[in-house]
Image 1 (cartoon, rainbow, N blue to C red):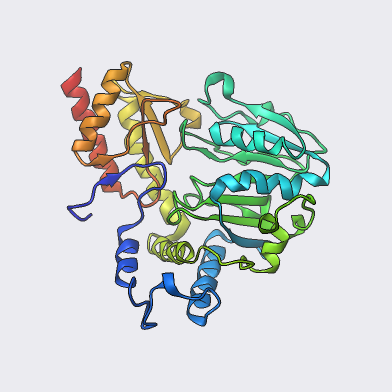
Image 2: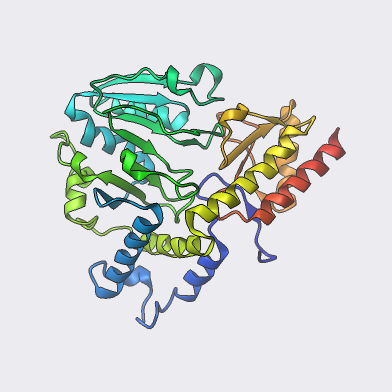
Length: 362
């Protein structure tokens, strides 16, 4: 990596692959002979439509999205989907099941309660979200319009290691922080969405992948631009889409291909996670926050037994070129987010720093 760049372990917006940034910089003023920046293009002009269509096609190919599903590019990030999901989907029966395994799934559950009856199918709140509930602890409602869960919890550092079985109830999943990091059978889901600022692109957009059969039953109060049916019919262009973010997503997808696609990045992800968890498992100072069976491969959360020592670690890490290692304000401690763009080298160097910090402060 360039000597003047730090290792950014931010939970989002997160680092982007260096080759992507370099290509975007090279094309900033004159995109491939067009004489203008992508930022300046009409979203309905041929130059930009080519970018849009190629990006969408690449995402469909890489995630193996079946023809039953549509890919949408929607503004407002993942948080706006907390509202869009129930507005579009809860009306079928007026009820929905939610798995509450972290801060964002809890916020989504609270938002859904404005539009229908919500059943908390399972929760890890009593343990401060240190684990993911097992399948046999999920209490399903047979008449739910959908079952909602968040596959990776950035704040608490837990991750679902299985796909919930919900029978005939459609699965809805927030995959904001682990999309494109492992293979997913999209056909099992009624809807997947992801804010792009962790593994996909700069902030400003959510990707929504929806089974087209689920669209068109939105509540009458649904705002026009939150209607999945309208967005499908207009190919995400009822208004001006987040053009530059879509362009950057396209570059990231090309980079992902160079890493062996999702299959290749999944292997790299496992290597990175093992490096840090090996440090935690063999440390007498650092304590992992999540239960081992539920530990996230994207967000490694840990602490020491001393809050002052935590702050010292974060401060010294910053001086050593490791940025944004402080845990979320809700939890404290430390968090290393090792999304797809974080190179193995950065994780290896952090592991060395952690061992040296422990040796110097025991």
